[in-house]
Image (cartoon, rainbow, N blue to C red; front, side, top):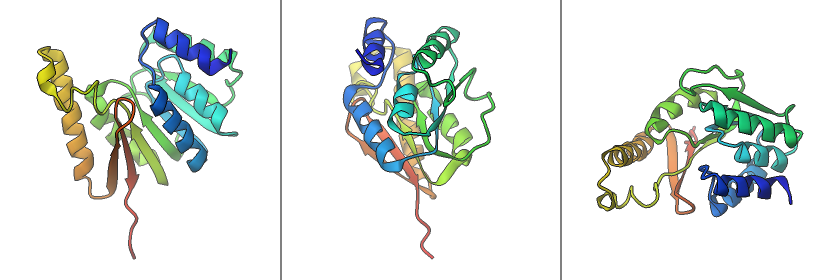
Length: 197
């Protein structure tokens, strides 16, 4: 069994939020087409996406941030087992406070606290390369963003509102354009608008 299968099985058994199958396939195809040099992930979980990214693109450098110490410990061990410690840097801490290597990132992947997506976007897009892409996962949040009436949970309703506001924020940006992809739990693909001279 390969590393990806093992991490997928671990994620399912331990109820870890991991990318759905079609979203992961999309990420792999995006990585292959972009061929990024630097990839920033906000929300490591068990390291499955970071490891897959490093295995998909040769010479890719991955910086991934995880707030939960237990998750970070599992991810660190998975990165070690995959032999990718030289190319995958795990930073343990709050993504709104941690410092990252001052590189230009060709792909930024946001998959952490749903209520903080806009703050993550604003904090890290200054690091985005000219032709870089920002991918935000969980835009549908199990279909509840489109159908908020399906829950009566106050906390969940708050998250839904924040995700709705985040989508409106993305669509309001003058210098970026966003496409919402209907796959997995909903993916937002955001790029800088081309400047027409």
